[in-house]
View (cartoon, helix red, strand yellow):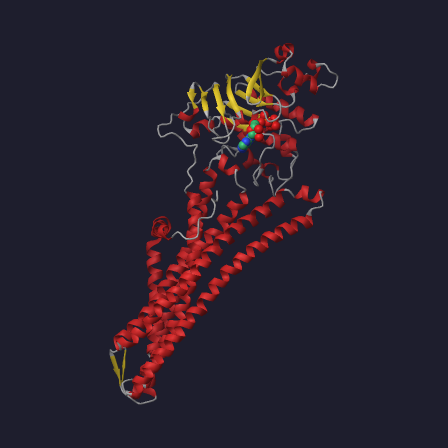
Length: 608
Ligand SMILES: Nc1ncnc2c1ncn2[C@@H]1O[C@H](COP(=O)(O)OP(=O)(O)OP(=O)(O)O)[C@@H](O)[C@H]1O
């Protein structure tokens, strides 16, 4: 799902990227965003306002001058001692309320957006083509959902709101200076190009390091998941230390990028601080000179310096935010690239419904290649399965049997020819209807980490307990399920009860019974079982096959003896077809395979 990292300089794409972030995520939360920006504005303005009070405070309290607050209220010197602290407390209260409001809103908005992105990413993943999902390790996807989405949040909630707050403090300071003396403003603005240069330099380094860190985070998740999946192999081969070293290498690589990125983030602040200090020094020199000329009071001078210090602080914050934004944008680019991949297997706009009832499945001269330019895996395969018939696919490993099975539910689409259901090309049918008519029982049935009842009813969430138990009884699973401590409410799957291979198979068969679909796909459902389990599963399968169009893969020919037709698949082609007895008589590949599987050399006995 995660595409290769984009090149780091993509300024031309910035505007549409921002527009999309606004359209897809922020615009749904206009009111909250507006309110948080408002709060941020109040915080920014209050910060400047309180500092500006230094002027009347010093002039009124120390020099006994009559003072004017914010150019509006005139306070007699005698009252300054009461009024100024009171005004500071009032401003402080407003400041605090706005800051609290801002924090609460930004937290909700930000995490809401992360959730939104995570759900969309998962939706895109689960709908993606199997070919795409198979081509990438799930670790990359997990890291995208867990980490990249948070970087976007950081940038577009904290970022946007804090930009407003600190940007406004800066504007308020510059505005205040412009109001009193345009020369002061000029001095302050002289620092701007220098700051812009610093921001650009660090922003670029930061984007590069961030992209690297994201790729390595994805590699780390992959390495961790791979190790958990392959833990038995690692233990039996005594490779724990080697795996530890391998993961350690990925961690180190990731760390190098993360440190670079953290350095850029941390160094940008002090550099702009240096520029700010130069500006403060220049303002101080100018204001001091003005004060000597009697053109500036001690209070104004103190307020200027206080404001400039605050401006320096805000500037540092804005600089930091710049790097946070760079990270967020890089993450957003990657996420959107993942979200934008449209599945190739889609429903036609004018797709037809598939009515209930028995169905005939046919492959008509089907050819298929996994890669568009690759060698064909299937060539010219034709076969038919009528309602109530059992058709078996046999043949050497890698011949293409599983591939044939995966074309029917449209996990992949044919390259040429057609797969039809009741003479209708499956690409012209509603995808939901097609898949609703197919039950699939595979070699290693998958169980969710949920109750056994929920696992059986996975394809029919509304099924009643009676229906679930009836399906389990048909699948010869009711007795063992009832004997479990919590019966049907016992948890199965990853973190739950460990069931035996035969028990898992029977739960999968119960699932298929409950789905009651007219097409049944069986992928070597009994190959991994002991004789007793196999007998139970085989009997359950035979009940399940009744009246359905069944297409099954079998490695062991003993399981296909009763099939209505057997297709022998070799190197992607149907090389023989017929009944068991007919194919054995023919003396071709099937007869050879039957002989190979026999212990006593008698092909008929071998497959009995
Ligand atoms: N997802 C895939 N991408 C690319 N090639 C694939 C993919 N799945 C299978 N193949 C290739 O297609 C060919 C047919 O594989 P398939 O699994 O259909 O054979 P099979 O007859 O079911 O084999 P087996 O009996 O061993 O299960 C093999 O050469 C295999 O390497």
